[in-house]
Amino acid sequence: MAEHVTEAARKIPILSRFDVVVVGGGVGGVAAALAAARTGASACLIEKAAALGGLATLGHVVLYTPMCDGRGRQVVGGLGDELMHLSIADGYGEIPPAWRDGTSQAERAGTRLHTLFNPASYMLALEEVALNAGVTLYYDMRFCDVVAADATGAIAAVIVESKSGRQAIRCRTVIDATGDADVCAAAGAETVSLDTNAWAAWFYTFNGQSLQLHKLQAPFDRFARPIEGQAGYRGDDVESVTRHLIDSRVEVRKRLAALRADADGPTPFVAMLPQVPDLRMTRRLVGAYELTRADDHRPFDDGIALIGDWREPGPIWSIPFRSLRAAGTPNLLAVGRCFSADQTVWDATRIIPGCVVTGQAAGTAAAIAIADADARFDRLDVAALRRRLRRDGAMLDP
Image 1 (cartoon, rainbow, N blue to C red):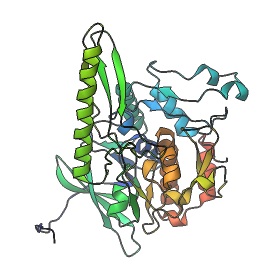
Image 2: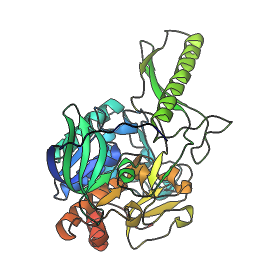
Image 3: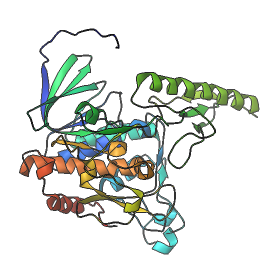
Image 4: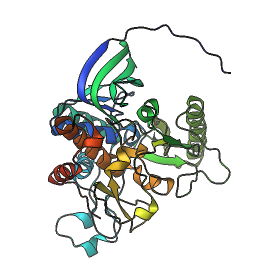
């Protein structure tokens, strides 16, 4: 039996109260908080780091991955489209010429709808748009646990820790945008964890004249599993996460030494290392429905978003609202890379567009559930949710 210590019981002060508490400030969490606030709910966004964007900004994964089916059809709209344009508002990136106004589907078919962006600019832009929408931000705050309201399993409050100590935030609904299903696990929901993440560290160098991004990562297969006998890493275990960071930085030092040895000109120096682990698939919810490869082009009555496949042209998945729901916790949804999709689809939906569209759907659903369904997602009028999402520009039907 593992050793343990006993912590004395204590009263935890209530920091604040919100209709919607979003845990995790990546692009999925930003989308969820934005959608909730714009649909009339009070919303806060809890982020353990000091900036928004998660892997997209702090992890330097600066590719706003394809929002199309690879055959000339855009399948992501709403906040997915808005946040893509926001990512390049500083002028760093651009929309591919084939996808600008006046082009045909045939002209677009050979080019994916994606772009690169400046991570620092995107951090600033995401923060500004969230604040302008009335979202309350809490930085340098870590989620710790949930407090159940009653026998239904609904969450009454989330427990957090920060420089202010251990506190509670009262909530009517909660959205898990942690990327690691931390809230789902704390609430006792069924989850799946992987130990097959490959080492990775996207970093920048500067040679006195220009910045260069290095997409440094171990080889991996179509399900993001390491190949060639390389070690795998968990995302829900502190020792494994630490090994991932250390091993990845060993590879950065090797790459830097090689770059300097091969430099034909000014010496390159490390400019920026990722500030979060560049993990791909860690832990996810097993929800009321698990999206699979067989669901390609399958319509759902409760479909709340579409997503294509960044790896290949053709597939389009409708994401059912059921795949966001934690079955035993009526006021909890999971978005981004921790909603319910099996491994054949998980790798396709974990990227930025998948995070944003599920975030938009969850935030909108939370505001509607608070107004009309006693803050319970199992009582939500999904038809009303779909109507609101369409009104807000979301694409729903494959």
